[in-house]
Length: 181
Length: 262
Image (cartoon, rainbow over all chains, first blue to last red; front, side):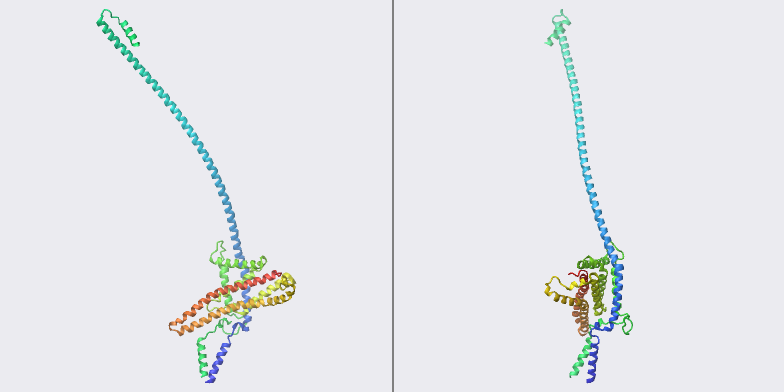
């Protein structure tokens, strides 16, 4: 019984001692070192032949592309400024032209207006003259009528009062003299 | 009586059966034979998976070479710019020559670290042998480079001219010691961080198994699983930071080799 237990303890102790720190098991060192060297050489070749040239190239290319874009952007900015200046000039010219056109149009309109006013004035004057002439005619004819009526009336009165003295010419002369007076 | 108690403890130990270190064992992929230097092991497998992941993200995702990048290409470019910026910040433009080496280190460590968080996975960077060799490679490379570039003047890194003459020999001794301790701290830091986190997760996983069996409806599972989730979140941070730290220190050492005059 006692020896069994002791054996068991011994076994456990053996098992506990065997692993210890496996890192200090020197029999595996050559193996680890060999595979480490292999891994380092392989990784070094991948790093120096593929990884670094590729990523370095990509970063350089990106740098070039970005500076290229910056140059282009500056160019575009200059173009935009030129375009703006041109636009300003064009705008100024257009404004000046518009003002000239407006002034000219105004002058033309004024001229037309003056002409129309003059024409209208002339027409009005003509009409006025015509009307005056018509009025004069009417007045003339009215005087004539009055004279005729007066002459007739005077002749009639005279022939009725003094039939012997019927001198129409004398009567007419007298009436005319009377009307004038 | 005493014997019975021990026996009970032993049988209990058998049911608890948590061995957080088992995950770090190097095992052959095929069969059960001895491990020679060329035997394909889980180290081979997980380095292979890491390289496949690197190719997937850094090569396949960037194959379009788009001027306006997609998601994968953005991540690849971000890693590229991050590592390059780190080298330029620490060593100046002269360090860019060593970009491929630093990038290799960073990618390999980052990907093996992150892949190690997958359940059932094997973390190669938790192995002292692996991180030790990485740190020694960096140490030897930097030291040889320093002497090649500057000859004996490289030794100036141990001679602090800013300090008063009297203390310079003492400082030089301290500097020499700290210089040779660099690869040790460099490697243990990475392996230790990886190992500790994974072991903690494994311990909680063991608790989860025991509590799931020992409580009604397995409700005891909730607490350890929540703890595992929290630790995994923390570990994700740790693995990325440790990959970064290893690379930053490499850059700092490289800077010493390039500009030894402090």
